[in-house]
Image (cartoon, rainbow, N blue to C red; front, side):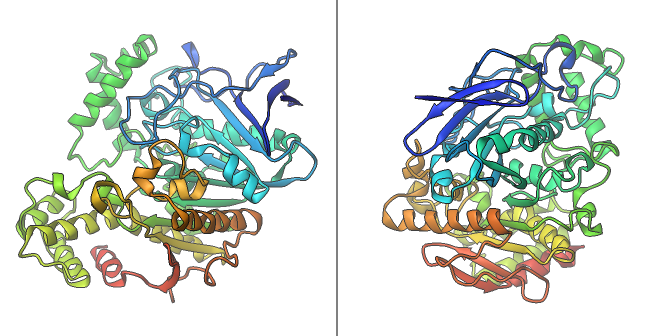
Length: 501
C-alpha cells in the first residue's frame, strides 16, 4: 500500500507499512554534477507528476568499506536525497530527529542498515529524517580558483536538507519548530560544526553529538595544503584546477587516497573535513560556542569508553611492546616528547596498567588515543556550551562489543544500533550483541534520545536521574547494562590533557 504527500516541490509517493510510513529518495537539491560539482547545493526543479519515494537513492561517491552493517546503496554524484520515517503524515506536529551519518567525511550514507527508522519512530512517536551529503573531495575540497565552487559543500548540503525539513516536515506529521540534529563520528563533527555556521541558524533547536566534536575542522592554511597535494596527485596545478570538473569520481577518489597517504604525519587529522573559510564557517565552531553563538540549543554529547579499539585492535598492534614505544608513537602526534611521557605515566597509574608488559602498554596507549581524539574534544565542547545553556548533558557508552572475544571493548560506533533500535541489522549481533539485556539497554538509550528530542532533557524512568553537565561536578551518564550517573569520570586523565594546554 502506498501513500502520497504533496510537498512544496511536488507530490511524492511513499509506503504505508504496518505501523509507520516510509518515504525514501526525496530530492532536496539539484544533482551536483557538471558545472555544479563543488558548487553550493541548488534547489531542485519542481515537478507535477507523482514522484516515487519507494527506494533509497544512490549514496555519495566513496571508497568501499569493510565495516559490518556499513554497506551503502549504489554510489553516484547524484546523491542529494533524504528519507522520512513517520508514524503518520497527519497534523500531530511530532518532534523531528534529523540524522547525519558518519564515516570520516569520506564514507557512509543514509541507506546503511543501522539507520532504518522504524524502531525509533514507532517507539517514540517521532519523525525521523536521514540524509545523504557530498563526501570526500567532492564535499570538502577547497578550490577558490574554480568558478562557482564553494568551501564546505557537504556542510551546505546538510543545511539545504534542513531547509527542506523546515518547509515540508509538517506535511509528514512533524514539527518544524522542534528539530533535533544528531550524528555520530563525522556526523557528530558535522553537528558540532553546524552550531557555528550562520546559515544553519534557526533550522534546528537541539543537538546531539555522538563521538564527534568540533575538533576536526581544517584551517584555511591546512585546507590549501590539502588542495595542493590533491591537485598534484591528479597532475594538476592551481592554474589548471578547472580540469578537476572533467575527472571521473574514481580518479578523484584515487587522488584523495594518494593525498591522504602523503599527508600522513602532517598533523592533519582528516584531510576532508569542514573548513574554517571565514564565510560559510567564520571560525572554529568551538570558539563560536564559547562565545554563546549556540546558547539557545540544548546539547547532548558523549563518547564510547574504548573508541580507538575499532581502529587499532590490540592483537594487531605492532611495535608497542614497552613504554618507550608508546611514548615515541604519541610523541609524533603531540608537540613535545615530555607531553607523551607524562600522559603515558598518568594514564597507566590512573588505570592500573602495568607498563612492564605489552598488554599494559597497549591498554594505556589505546586509552590515550580514545581521549585525545574523542573524549577530550567532546568534554571541551560540552564545557563551552554549558557556560551558556543549562540543558547540556554528557554520556559515556560502556557496553562492550562481543566481537573478537571482547577485544574491541566499547569501541567507536558501538552505540549506533542501541540508539536506533537496530540490533537485528545485518552484522550487528556479532558486533553489538543480542538478547534481552542488549534489548533493554537499547530501549533505555532510545528513550533518552527521544526524551531529549521532545524536551531537551534526556531523563526518563528507565535511567537514574541524569544531572546536567558543568565544570563543578562533570556529571556523566554511563550507559551500560547497569547504567549509573558518575561525577567526573576518569578525571586524572582529563586533567592531564588540560595541563598540556
